[in-house]
Length: 210
Image 1 (cartoon, one colour):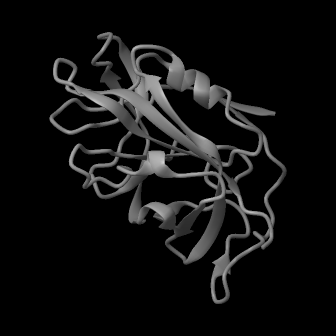
Image 2 (image 1 turned 180 degrees about the horizontal axis):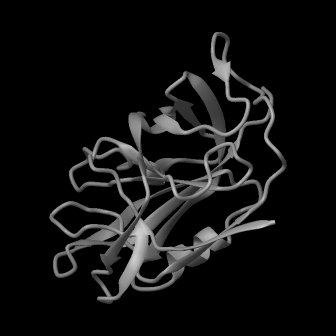
Image 3 (image 1 turned 45 degrees about the horizontal axis):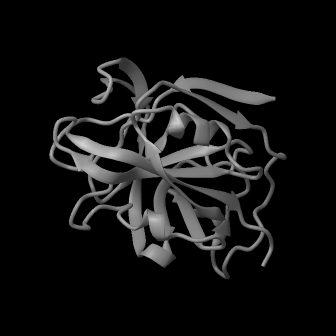
């Protein structure tokens, strides 16, 4: 069983480095084993017993502790190609992340997508996403206090040109076991396009028992 959605991680143009992609993404998320009570929760935490609607995100290795907005699919014009595309709704704040609420939820057994901005000067939520390494911890929490612990899979996928299908190819070819994709910008700022040239993706899997 596979989840299929035509979607493009998109962006609004402006002076900030925002999320954008060059082509429509056919996001194919492979089904995972059915969720159960999550192993590895800290003492005093309420471990997620299944999927959650995330309202908070922590990534200790890069100093992230942020709110998560729920954002659906939006229509936008790709700044590099001029093509009208469906895209992920990005966070309204540079300090928050967003979950693509039209797609799978974290812990559902399918790959969820979490997005965050990067900003030149270093004051946005995912400025240091490219620094993550395999084994680093990612924590998602919901409004009821349930917590989902994840572990980074492999090195960040950087240099994904927005003028090509690189982001689509990376998401469609996600590694086995990927439960969450963290997506942001990278590369140089293109003044003409009003956004950065690349995307960066980090995959994470629900943590095994400690």
